[in-house]
Image (cartoon, rainbow, N blue to C red; front, side, top):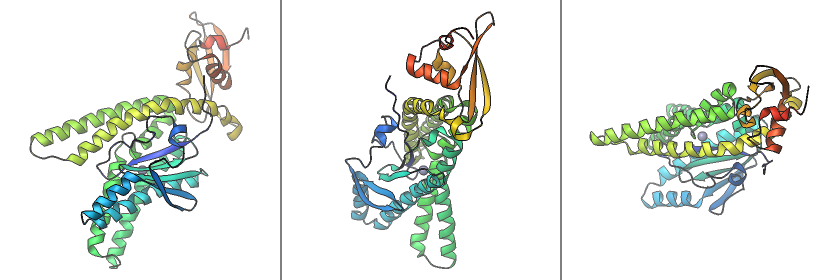
Length: 334
Ligand SMILES: [Zn+2]
């Protein structure tokens, strides 16, 4: 079973309230997503060691806006999306994570990191919150600038609008938006990454369907909000992609899980009781971060067959396959 050993992650965001799925690498495992600047992306510089890349379609979108005489709007969107992503990048830096690059896409931005932030709930939640928080801070600074007449009024309103749209859209509690990542991080601390992702994906799809139905009803009643419907579509498709990628991320998480004890020195024990015939893939679904799992294995008569440690269970899964009964990992009488 090929196990991807590198650990890389990303934070992907929607632009304004009208984002749609970003295509590059979204269906592929994180290794493929984080291959550096893609063929259609141009490096335009770097900020504090973080490479800034712009997808050529995003440049095209900006060029069209300029051609339509909406150059100010183009500049605002570019600046605000960039600052939002740099907010994520700065938060990641505070956790000592390396941010490889920030890419601006026609449908949003993506900050690519060297670590799988999704697997540490506290880190994922904080980094996800940093993007919308950056936009809200910018709104506050703009209001302050207006008070002292530092910014022309025609720029100010648009700047605040774009920032609020980006913050509000990304705070919707649905994957793959920042709000959805914050939700998953909360669930993950209790359920573990895999089950939290499944629950968050189910919720996100229902929320997206609700948004699409509400949009359709609004259209029927003569009030149409296309940006809301596009956001709902973004969430529906994007949530499925998060689910598809969760499998790869989970395997990486399992590869790194046994290192937690060495890193922290001491972990709270988390006992799990299971029948010996249960496939090992079902057992690891219950593994949560920052806990050391001891798997108590019983037969159907309730007799104790043995206790498997976390590395034994994970090692068994990686070497002998997902369907291996957990009882087979005990390796003889104990
Ligand atoms: Zn974001």
